[in-house]
Length: 148
Image 1 (cartoon, helix red, strand yellow):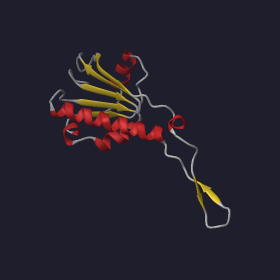
Image 2: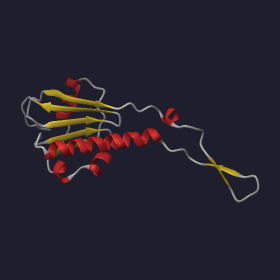
Image 3: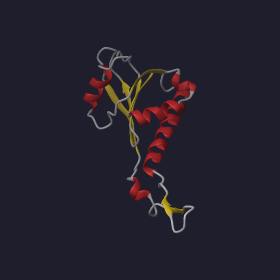
Image 4: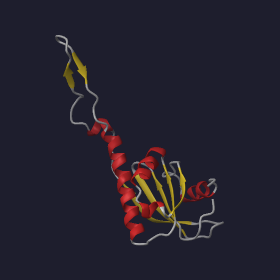
C-alpha cells in the first residue's frame, strides 16, 4: 500500500488507540506518533455489581438465570464511538486529508458504523488487524505491506 506523505493512520483496538502521521514518502513511510489514547477497561466480572439475576418461571419453585450485561464489551464499543467522533472533529477542522484505519475486527466494525461522511470521504484504506501492541517499525511494515 502506498501511504502518501502526511497521511493520518489510526491504529486501534477496544482499549488503546494510536494516531500516527506518515512523515516519510509514499514508498518509504516513516510514522510519527501524534497522540495516544487509552481507556481503563477492567474485565466484565470486575465491573458487575452483583451475581447474575434470576427470574421466576411458570412452574412452581422454578427459576431461570438471566444473562448479565457484558460491561467490558460495551466499553470497547463506546471507546470506538469516541474515536469516530474524534476523527469527525479532526476532519471537520481539516487536520488531515487522507486516513488509513487499522483496527481489531470488532472495533473496525463499530468505527464503520459511526464514521461521518467527512471521515469516509478521506478514508484511503482499512486493515482489520490489531497492531496496537507492536513497535512502530513493525506497524510501518505491516501497514505498508498490506494490499489495498
